[in-house]
Every structure is written in C-alpha cells, then in structure tokens.
Image 1 (cartoon, helix red, strand yellow):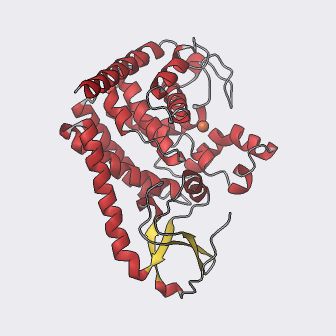
Image 2: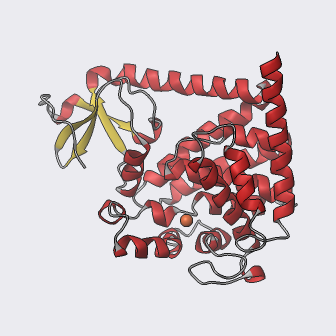
Image 3: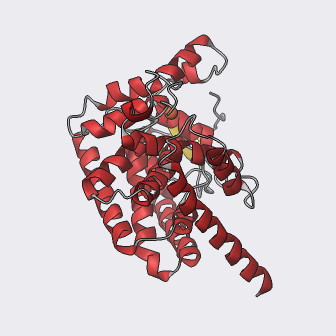
Length: 340
Ligand SMILES: [Fe+2]
C-alpha cells in the first residue's frame, strides 16, 4: 500500500495515539492522520480526507489498532470525534423516533466495541466479555421495545467494512430469530454473537492474499474462511460452542450444495440457517445501496426466488412477512413525506 510522502519529520514524542475504533470510516478527518510503521510515523491521510472502506478492512486484516495525530491537534481531534458521534446519534434518533433513543445509543456503543474486537490481534477474554455485556444489554432493550423491522433497517449501516457488515447481519439475525419465535435471551445472544463473528476468518485473511482476488490462494482462503474463523475464535474459551457452529456453517445451504461440509436441512444448526439468510440479505442490500428506493426490494426478491435451495423453506416465509410489512411501512412513510 502506498502512503503520502511527508515533510513532517517529528520525534515519536510529538504524536498521540487515537484508537482506530473511534474513527468511523468515511468520516471527515479533522487533522492530518499518521500511521506508525516500525519506528517511523508516516502521514496516512490529510485533514479533510477520510478513511475509505477498503483501507479500514486492510487495518482489520493487519490488526492495526491505532492511528496518530500530532500532539497539538489531539484534543481538538477528540472533541471533533465526540461531536460527530453525537450528531450521528441525533440524526438516527430523528429517523427512528425519540422513543428509540436508548436503542440508538446502545447500537452506537456496540459498534465501537465491535470495531475494537475486529481490530484486536488476538481476541482477549476482556474484549469478549465487554462485547458480550454490550450485546446482552442491546438484546434486552430490543426485547423490551420490540422495534419493528423498519427500525432495524434504519439503524443498519451502509458502510461496507467487514465489521459493519457483521453488525448488520447480527441485527438482522436478531430480527429474523424473533420473527421465527426465538425468545430465549441466551439463544438470542448466541445468535447475535455467531452472526457478528461469521466472517471473522475472512476479515483476518492477510493482505498478501486478499490483495490478489483472482489467485488460487485467495480462492482457497475464501473456501476455508468459516473453518479458519472457528480455529481463531476457539482459542478463546469464553466463546460458546453455538457461536462457533454458526461461524462454521454460515455458507452451508439448505439443499446441501454449500460449503465447507455440504450438509443439508436439519443437519445444519437452526441458528446457522437464520444467519445464512441475514448474510445474503445484507450482501444484496449493500450491492444495491446506490439505489435506496429498490435496495430492500432487490434483497427480498433474492430470498423469495430461492425456493428451498439456499435457505430453510420453513423459516423463510415468516422472515419474508416481517420484511415485506416493514417495506410497506417504509413506502407509506415516503409517500407521506412527499405529500406533506
Ligand atoms: Fe462468509
């Protein structure tokens, strides 16, 4: 990867670290930002620029946890980050209604922890515990408030980093899980965590491999990412078995033509079948995100035309009902805005 040349030749003491999880992708940077390579600080982005999705995915794959700013800009930079976060919360609250403020706040806090988790080189027990606690309180609020599907769609992210895709899949899995009658908080927590980590193995494919998408090595790494994810995650004893099973099985297909094992129907764990649906839904939405009017319709179409190939045909109708109802609400809201 290339970096900008810089004429700043400063000593290490001149720089302050900023956790990368605090800097959102695609947000305007309020100061020049540096990256540390060996003992050197190299300018990575200029003030006013932003960190694009692919660079963020690169940082996740390389376990880069911190960026740097010059000491003189540290305070202002941090204040600006906080301001931006507040602004985002307010924008979302306007979208979903004041009654869902805690839901939004919890979601924003959760996102930061998810980024920390993904940027960690080795998942520490401490990080996993913090993540679990945040997931538990998020699920508690969701169960209390019972928000409709359109609220879930409104809080989902359009930033296509592996961390934010994972979070969208987790939110959708939670919604779908409840739609098919899952109500037990422990089951829902496992479902959420499994969805969060489903692509962990993919996220950690080194850039030397992921940078060559047409190579055999990359193809192999993709085929292997569910198992690679399990291998990495199971080093951490606080990750429960159902979570590992979801990670292992998220590319299995109902008819048995998925990978890595090619298992079918009931041989696939029920929660994995839910995550498989959520994963494809979010992928199609993301592919179509340039067209806000039709992105959800496109994703629903893909699910509808599946006819028992990829997805569990008994779960799917209930999930589709929830999504279609939500889409109807969306359209009605749009019409109201257009009239009013
Ligand atoms: Fe995957």
